[in-house]
Image 1 (cartoon, rainbow, N blue to C red):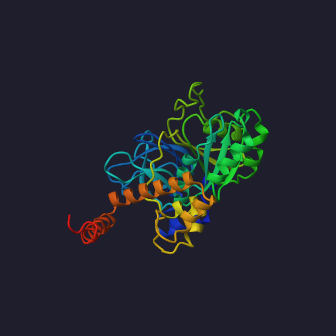
Image 2 (cartoon, rainbow, N blue to C red; image 1 turned 120 degrees about the vertical axis):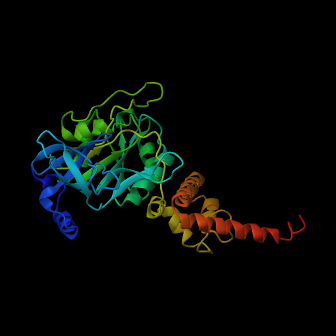
Length: 352
C-alpha cells in the first residue's frame, strides 16, 4: 500500500518540496491517543511519539501529514519531527477560561454532519456545526441517519434543508444498506471525509455500512433519551473499499465555536443576502433603521429563530476573538469607552 492510497498527491509533494521535506520520510496520522499517534508510513503502520528534540509546537491531529523517522532501536516508536502546513483544519473553542482552539481533524476534504432521525431535527445544532465546518475550509454535508425511525421523513428532511443552506442533505438507514449507495458513489479514492456529531447518531454504524464490514466499534443508545454511550473513544482514519478515507470521531456533547469568519457567512448565506440591502454597511440587524434583515423578519421570509441563532453564534465568535486577540480586545474596550462618553452627553442622562 502506498501513501497515495492515504491521500498523498502531487500538491502535497510540491508543498513538501517547498518546506524542504523529504517525501520519503512523510507519514500520515491515522489515529491519536493521549501521548502517542498511529502513523501510516510508506513501509506500513507504525506507532509514534514526540521526542523532546522535535520542532513541533502543537501536537498533530488525525489527518495531518508529518515528517517522521524510526527510533534508534527497532522496538522504539517512531519520532514525529514536524507537521506539514494544513490544507484544512476543523477546530472548536477550547474549554476553560484560557481561550484558544482545540484541533479536531486536519486535511479533510468533506465533513459529514451526522444527525439521527430517531430524534427531532435540531436546526440550531446543525447551524452551529455548519458554521464551524465552513470555516475549516472543508465542504460540509448533512447526513440524516436512522431513516427507518423517522416519524415524518419528508418533513424532517425539509427542516434540515432549511438549516443547511448551501450544503447537501442525504438520508440513510442501516436497515436498508442500499440507501447508502448514493453516498458510496459520491466518494473517490484518496478523498478524506470526517464524520461529526453527538454520540448515538450512527457515525460508526455509517462507517461500517460503507466499508461493508465491522471496522468501527458501535454501541446501543439509551431508550429514554436516545443518547449514545461514547463507544468511539479515539479519532481514527479508516480506508474503505474504493479508496476513500473515513475519519470516525467521538461524539461531542458540546461544540463550542472558535473565531468564526467566512464560516458564519456561509452557514447563514440567506441572512448575508438580506444584509446586502441594509442601509448601513456595519448594520448588526438589531433594530437599526433601514435594516433589510429586520424587514425580512417582519415580512415572514426569515425565521426569527434562525436570526437568533446567527446572532448568538456571532456573539460567541466575537467573544472568542476578544479572548484570544489583544488588538480585538483593545478595540472593544475603546468602543465601550466611546459609547459611555457619548451617553454622558445625551440630553436624557446629562443631569444624572
